[in-house]
Length: 162
Image 1 (cartoon, one colour):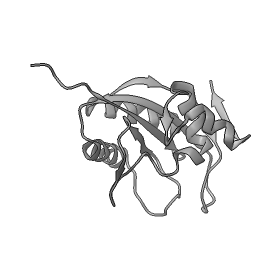
Image 2 (tube, one colour):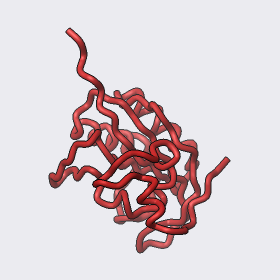
Image 3 (cartoon, helix red, strand yellow):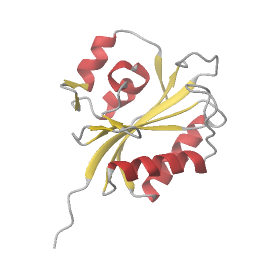
Image 4 (spheres, one colour):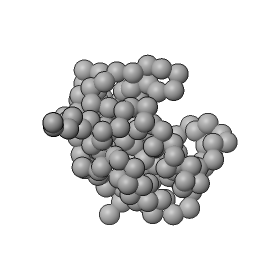
């Protein structure tokens, strides 16, 4: 009996507290260990904070993973990794040691109170689209590719960290 084909999901990671790049690397390793195997990883990008709270700049990255986990189980893994790395949810869109968002889960659409896929804001956020375009420019989300969506946003402040 053959195993089912793994699902490919796109994830966004961000951090603006502590060792930002190190925390993202640890998060990716923990996701791998939890059953979400990284098959592609973007560079790290320096991005301006987004949202109503004054805070330090972010480091953002995206990964493509293959997994046998269901979408809810992948969400549970992401939340566990966040907790294990010290994430405390105090202020919406506030500073955070780590944030992991599921952007896509193959071409599956989900709309539950716990999980909406594709991510509702993925096509509006340059800090997500720039790293995602590096590893998946042709990924189609809601009828447009990542590369096309990025062009529509115009210029912005997202800088690759070498």
